[in-house]
Amino acid sequence: MPLKDTSEVGALLRQAGIDAQTAEAVMDIDGLMQKWRRRALRRELGHRALVDLKIGIDLAQFDVLVAIEGPEPEFGEVGGETMVATVAERLNIDPSRASRLVSEMVEQGFARRGVSQADARRTIIELSDRGWAVVRAVRAYKFLIMGDFLGEWDTAELAAFVPMLKRFGSWMDGIDPATEKYAAEIEQLAAGLAQAPKAEVA
View 1 (tube, rainbow, N blue to C red):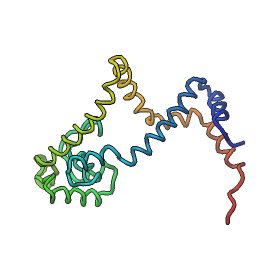
View 2 (cartoon, rainbow, N blue to C red):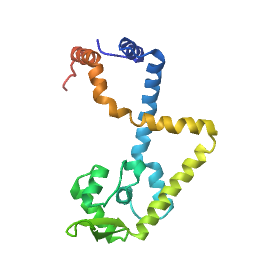
View 3 (cartoon, rainbow, N blue to C red):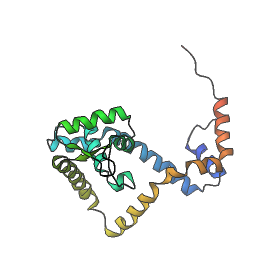
View 4 (cartoon, helix red, strand yellow):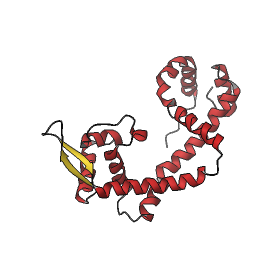
């Protein structure tokens, strides 16, 4: 029988050995993440920053500037030279789209092309002074807004929240081990779907 409500989901989680408190937290967090994802997709804060700062570029173009800079907290271990292929990889976009966006940023003076110090045949991409100024200004705008919100938290809350958020940010890394661990429960879900009524074709 397919799952119909959260009580059935809770029963499945308990059957899998996940306690009631953890199950409730999972469902609450999932709801919050779905809400957060919908707002994040609209990129409200980033769009507002570009408008209020009168920068004259769109979010896709700004993302390219950030990818050229390659901040460690966002992209992990970052070092060495940045090329168009690097930008494509960091933003998970097609190389041809990355090339077009990089060219736009170069033409508008936010970035510049250079020659690799490691291989003179290779072209690298760097931020211009104008590009650096834009990245710093947008980041400062975002930090002002977030800082205003977090400023209402006490020291203990911040000290607990940041490490826990970093820890939670890695939960997707455990997908493969978890699917192996709960193979029987996943098979049960698949069997329930197979028994569900077929959709009617108009």
